[in-house]
Image (cartoon, rainbow, N blue to C red; front, side, top):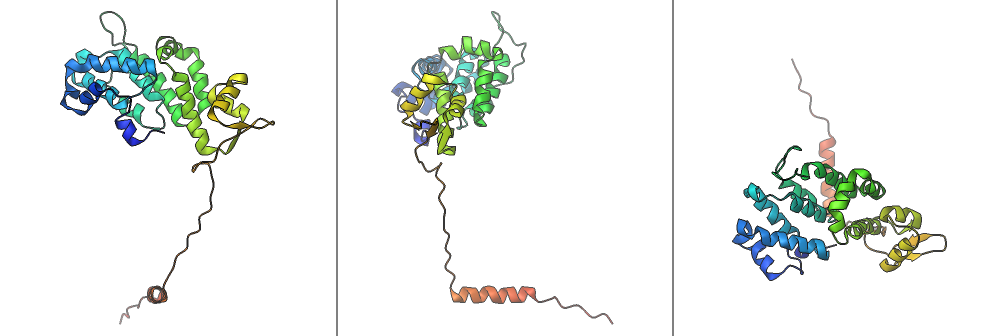
Amino acid sequence: MASAANWSSPSTRPPLIETLVSGVDRYNPSNVSILEDYLYHQIRSEEYDCLANLAILKLYQFNPDLYNPDVVINILIKALTSSPFPDFSLCISLLDERPASAASQDEPDPLPTLLPILTALHSLLQQCRFPTFWTLYRSTEVEALRDNYTVECVGFEDAVREVAVRAVKAAFSSIGSERLGTYLDLSGADLSAYVEKLGWIVSNSGVVSIPANPDNQIESTVVQENIQLSQLTKVIAHAAQTSQPAAVPVVN
């Protein structure tokens, strides 16, 4: 998982983008095209820069005339696979409410239609409901998102699988290959090749062994407290005082 430092300043970020994101030019509307081009570079190269993408959404907030729904959808798609990090929620918080009937002069705005779908997919990833995620993602309901957007996002499905792999590594020391396949939307030779690439071992019975890590190992912890005799005496004396019944006033 990425460190906070790499999240805020990824090593793949070009110097020009670093200057824009870190300086006052971050809110200069004339630079929005540079940031949008950088987003499409991320789409094509499997790179990801959340802060640069958030800067685009902030510029759209300040300058509604710059709004490009395709750019927003692609930003949300990239943020979708950052789970369990809160990138998707950060992006959503910068979106203005737009009615489903909102349209430009040329064509309708696709965001109001696709936003509930993207939100549902994000929720399923956050809840680690990976088989349900893949079922929804493959459904006809999500066809427009697949055919027009995620198909252009290089490595999108593998990025989703990486989210599942992180969850599996944290929760399992071993898992059935069939069950793992439902998490990864893979089967047969594709699943075997993917598991081999991860360096995980599959037994003859189809059980996948997950390498030990701090999250999937249960270790007993012994807590030992050293109490001095003087401290114990104070505790006993205090308990004796509080246990004495309160004096009842005598009424003549």
